[in-house]
Image 1 (tube, one colour):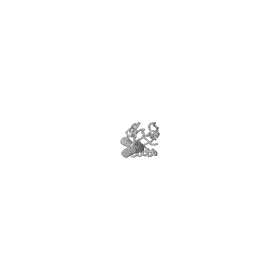
Image 2: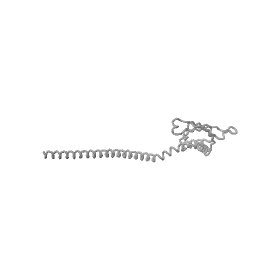
Image 3: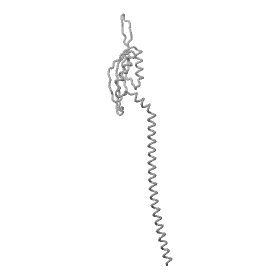
Length: 185
């Protein structure tokens, strides 16, 4: 019986040791599982941050590449306080080409498509008077201004002055035009 009891003690001791080893393995398993989950979460966060950084870098690169184009587009519109300078430029172009110019009207026209961009349409109606070549050159210079100029209406007519004996002295060409240009508010 003694051997039976010692065998039972040994079995109980081995059972307790096996149970302790199982409990230790379970706790080690739970610890490793939690660390793996944390590592997986950190890896996903890191991957997400890397993708965001790559996206931001790509956007910055695109902005750098588009910088000259953005500047060009921006300079093709009249600045907030540039309407007077624009009119003075028109008058200067007319005078340089031997024309007299009269500005009939200036107005601003809001467009629903332009409102979100804080822009408006600046309309100018004017008349010029002078020789044909000056009128033609003036029109071509207006079209080639660094602004996005749209010529809405343009009429050209001639009026001649008659001197003594109904002899024409000179031809005076008169033009009437309306132009529009984009302007920042």
